[in-house]
Length: 431
Ligand SMILES: NC(=O)c1ccc[n+]([C@@H]2O[C@H](COP(=O)([O-])OP(=O)(O)OC[C@H]3O[C@@H](n4cnc5c(N)ncnc54)[C@H](O)[C@@H]3O)[C@@H](O)[C@H]2O)c1
Image (cartoon, rainbow, N blue to C red; front, side):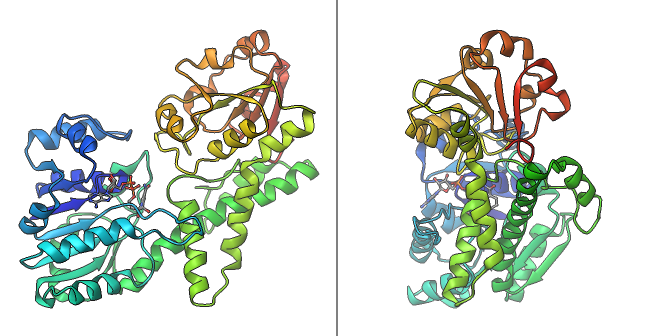
């Protein structure tokens, strides 16, 4: 099948490569020339496990091409995926401007039948809206079907998750489009859910809101643990053993981040408001997460009268390990707050420094872990990168001004840093 994927980000690039690896002929389009140039030179524009090898493989087999020419892609492909960004506007509503530009291009260039598959996370009713817009712009209804096919991949495990998704959701009302979807998706072992576009669109938001709520729930309980000496790790473990709950995504910490949960929970609340529905649980999950992010700063303010002149090292700036994505990461909120309060902030992350530097230019970025620690007053561990688990406590005791670790991910608890004489704080423990 000739497939075009529009948008070569975390979702679009992986979609394009996995489909190319299945011997479809794929053209992946992005407006970002730099990104397309990198891809044509076999350089992955993002960090993702297995990406470099898959890119190489697909370029060698010539099943994929990368281009900035959206018009040709639309004119030559039978299947057109939309995988552009749908970030949050200031007020939480979804910014659909990137998607709208693609719809304009479709209206201009579509001259044969194609299935338009929307992979981006979009408000309920978008499939209908795109259909209506194309018809209003004069595209014949014989020339297209629009389908909702939300993506559930996790950054860091994106290739695996795309290939072995827990489920593939397809919101489709046309038999002709369904026959084409079956050709694409039948080879995948994942369960397929064929449903209406509205249901499909809402499944994506509901799934993210549920997972975000799960994290905020355990953080809420962690806050009670810190006052009662109950052990949050044991509680999460015990609850997780109940198969109705599961241990996945159920650890106390400084909150969720990333390009999806924060924006999608806020978007869902706004979408519901439009229908005069108050999503109180989701709203609470958002509020808990916001206050959770700044817990380490609150702790420091309780300890130190003055933040001025203090050197704080942030260990890990990405929203989770195995990705370079720093969008809406809790670390960013912490860095900004500390700088605002007058602290000197150092950052060390194995791969996230570059992305963080673009949004937090006032922090100092380090290439070497122990250089970032030397002379600091406090470490705040924000991302559970494996290398942090092996932190050299002797170095910390010898070279930090105060041997102090705030563990925002409860990642070092099994090493008992306190036994070595380090001031050690955990979420649900002393924070
Ligand atoms: N990142 C994730 O983990 C994830 C997971 C599931 C779903 N999603 C959803 O998938 C969608 C894409 O997310 P992402 O993280 O891949 O976004 P991204 O920002 O990484 O990538 C979007 C890409 O679209 C390109 N683009 C924008 N306008 C364009 C245009 N007019 N023509 C061509 N290219 C254009 C951008 O240059 C960018 O490369 C979003 O709706 C997101 O919510 C993301």
